[in-house]
Length: 304
Image (tube, rainbow, N blue to C red):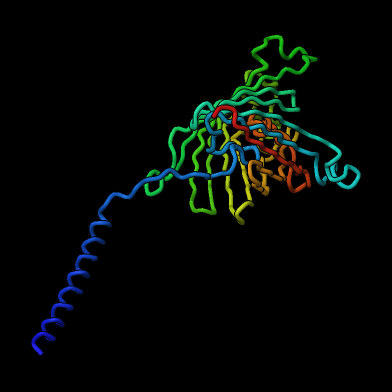
């Protein structure tokens, strides 16, 4: 009987000790530093529709991209007689982006609008970390040269052909499904045409400030909904009857299949680079002046 009581007491003691040990380990684990890992795949591509994302091309990798804009789906320039814009190619851009390092990317491109040739650089300044720094910060800059024929003697000074844009890209992967981004943007053009808004008297300026807002919502393993909007601070562009302007707005679907990323979108802007779609966006969604576009991206490993 004594042995039975002793054994029972021993079991109670051991179970209590084990429980206390588990509680102590929980306390120690709570106080231990959590391993911080970088957040990956905030976006699936270096671009959304027109907007840059925080993503860069990996070191030794080349991203070849074709971006296409058709004509207006509806409105006075769209409809069935223009096959809802498919008869018109309002803009096409071919581009190559190369990863010098995993954080530094350079690129070149050529657009149909104004025959613009652009060169760009993109650098990851800070990266979002799980249980740590909550956002990624990326710097982007480009220069655009307009080599079109000088029919009106606009480019007697070759520097007049140049324009520049600078962006600070702040992104956060809120969850595995939702990513958000802000893009404060500054655009400078060496030459602008003298013009005045007849309503408020504001003149056109060489410098333009704009704020982009971007979102990506993952709906399946390989498909996501995307949207972007840019608010441009320009008194000249506000309610200007002679130079109509509407804030650039784009929505689309992104599909990932292996090494390819396909994107279909609708946007009211013809332009693709910052100097085109932020500066000039004369078409309105409410008037049916939105354009179907698509982007195809193919990544090649150049250096292993």
